[in-house]
Amino acid sequence: YDDLLADGLLEEARPDAQLHYVGKRSGRHSLPQQEISALLIELARRGQQVCRLKGGDPFVFGRGGEEAEALREAGIPFQVVPGISSCIAAPELSGIPVTCRGLSRSFHVVTAHTREGGIEPEECARLAKTGGTPDGLPEDFDRLAALDGTLVFLMGLSRLEELARRLIAAGKPADTPAAVAGEGTLRGTLAGIGREARSFPGPAVIVVGPAAALDLRDQSVLPLCGVSVGLTGTARLRGSLRSAFEALGARVRCIQPARLEDACT
Image 1 (tube, rainbow, N blue to C red):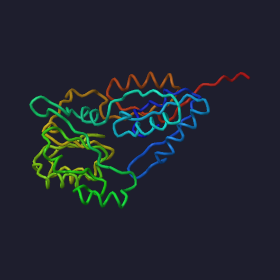
Image 2 (image 1 turned 120 degrees about the vertical axis):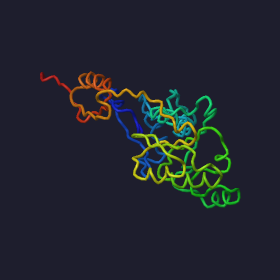
Image 3 (image 1 turned 135 degrees about the horizontal axis):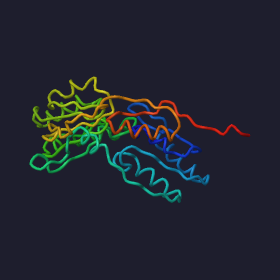
Image 4 (image 1 turned 90 degrees about the vertical axis):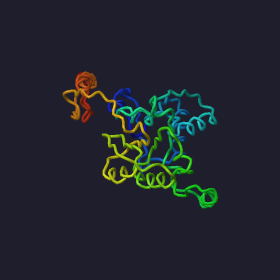
């Protein structure tokens, strides 16, 4: 399983399930991608049923295509279950529609990291000749800046100031609305969003375009909105409490699972 999973999701696993953490965060990878694919193959060849659990959608910058290809080449049957990508979900939870009639007729999803662990010298030379960026940032800022729809950048929070600077240099108006959506929401303009987001906690999704100025969230506040609740107890008890607290707007986490065991021998 990866990072960024919904709270409580792993609690749905069977008690005897083996949990293998293979998450990736900025600058910290628990396992290289090739080893993750090899682990999937190894576990399946042992005769085990394997669930590869990802946040968002596995085929939207989730490396799911690489893993599916590795499984197919190994002759291992698999099924892909679609998810909801953070490129849509994170803005929507912040009240930002990536498309909106009269404001944005299209949206474009871009990753701010085009290589894992850097770019090879040959690739740097090619990008230099074609006007690309040999630092892992998106290529062709001129084309991105000319797009009328909503721009959504994933994995770009640490590079937001440079992203904004290059978009403005390529012709995007400095007063274009921009937002950062994640653990909270930050709104501003392209000119200032990078500076304002320096202390914003990651991970987050960056939205650029007129729709980024919208806030279509329900303004009625639930009584526990913004409150974090830690649960302990058995899975059944935690499940019941989780539903009750989440209905009141709380963010719920399991901090100490417990289980009942038969004392008879």
